[in-house]
Length: 308
Image (cartoon, rainbow, N blue to C red):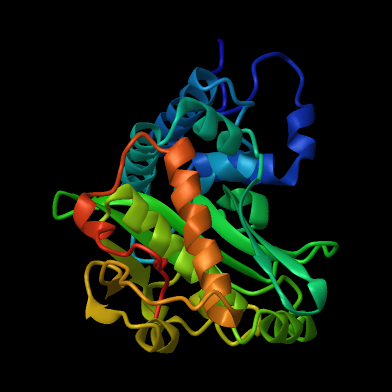
């Protein structure tokens, strides 16, 4: 009697893939939800293949089989959100951009001049590349040139809410392992701009450039890593979203209005914020298939858009 292959397992007689812990977890979890696992594995492998990217990593294959974006979601709902994101991603961005992200590449979208000649970079990559695979599909992160420390990481996914394109922010984390000193140093060198403010600004600026009318953010009570909230590496989301101008509501807990306009004097903190927004404008112009509605960018001749 022939046996059916394990969902997601590589073809062939070798079982060396079992030596990979992430692959073992994926395979064993797939036994609990075989139809979800099979649909997702087929979809994401075909997606990667169609864009000329390498095979998805086990941690990507396992996404709908463990808590993802919102702790309340069922495996079937996680699968639907994931598929919706990738379909939006392919519609919104150029083929080359999608390929690079799926291949695990990092794209630097902005460089910020800081005190003492320091330079900070804002980059975008697949969320799994910066250990945020349970909180979204894309991640912006900030790092200082010459240092291998991700000072802030924010994860997001593209969805449709009430029929309109929306950006969903499901995670905001500091450096792995704390690194409080580096975060304080970055804030000082960036003239008071906190790393987490820089990454949130990037997410909101991207939403504006893509024509998304809102950014939805996860509430503490719904976060997939809620049990770890007391650890220093994770934000207490509710208070931070409120501080940055979000209002309670929407399917995930909080909603940001479209990014507004703030004058920049070309110096210090405002210059750093302007550089982020300029970088996202360029990134969208080069890599996206869509242009933001004129109303999002009107009448700001010598001034740049930034976050409050």
